[in-house]
Length: 234
Image 1 (cartoon, rainbow, N blue to C red):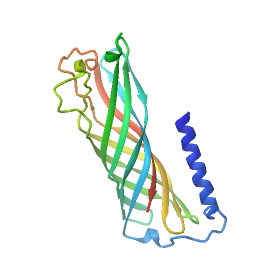
Image 2 (cartoon, helix red, strand yellow):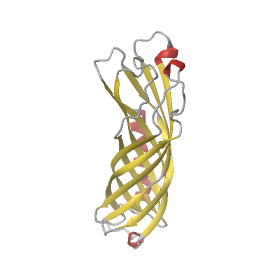
Image 3 (cartoon, rainbow, N blue to C red):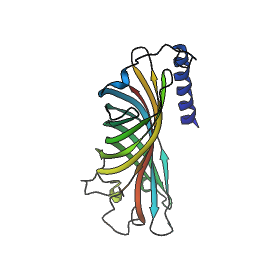
Image 4 (cartoon, rainbow, N blue to C red):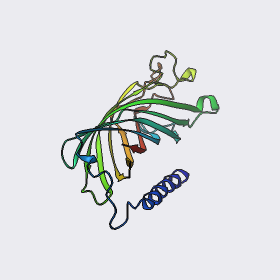
């Protein structure tokens, strides 16, 4: 609820600022009229993320895993290639910091029951943006595509595993992304708040050396999924 309230307050602040600039007025003065006619343009984004794990089990689990999500932050660059009046190809390499806390049932010791999974992702998404007709100084859009993600904190090269309190995942993952946003044409730049879902396509977990490990032995697949809220400046 706190995260949802934070998002709502941000959107209200953006709306208030936009109204003060006349963006949502009936007959606004058009800002940056020729901006979208550029073949290529650049930008950057700031934002935050909430990551989760989707966990599938081989059998009905004796040890269940609860995932506590935390809010991380994002920063990155945007390269935009205009393909059509309403279609753009985008490359948005970014750095994403996140943390998830796993709690395993069935353990009596906190040292065994809890795992802190910190991730530092470098994401390489290739996206297609579908924009509506511009109305005044606003233009909604949909965006979707695929990405490859490198986790710099995967522990994939470690010989230790959960028996030594070391949780390991694969360094590279593939994902698909889908979301929506709105372009706001201000006096000197274009501002684009957006929200996007990211869904892992492959199993990320590296199993413990013991195939009967209570931490990883019964897991069929573990895939990342998350929500990105980005604020892009062009």
